Image (tube, rainbow, N blue to C red; front, side, top):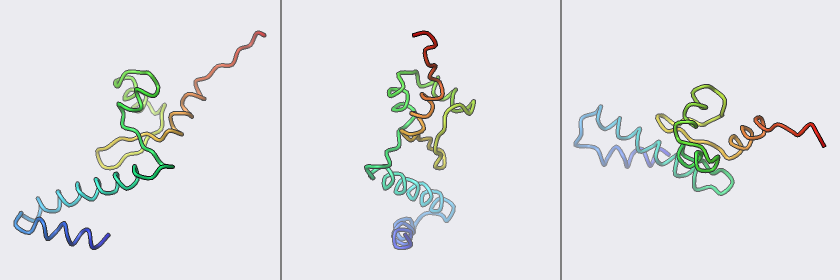
Length: 100
């Protein structure tokens, strides 16, 4: 990780220090997100992808997240959802039939 940081700092040598650090943070976040998303067993979905999976609107997913009714993962400004979190949300909202 330190090698990546050194390379990124070298890349932004000409920038002001604040600008370089802001870009460094953004690029590090992007690298982490790409690494996590590339692992097969740990797929993270964007809000739009989660909305498609649950067949809901983007605004409804956002509302449920803000109400604390659906779990999510935050990386800086990025919001992601694990498939297991979406499955848990569906299971909690499932109502079993009472009549047979």
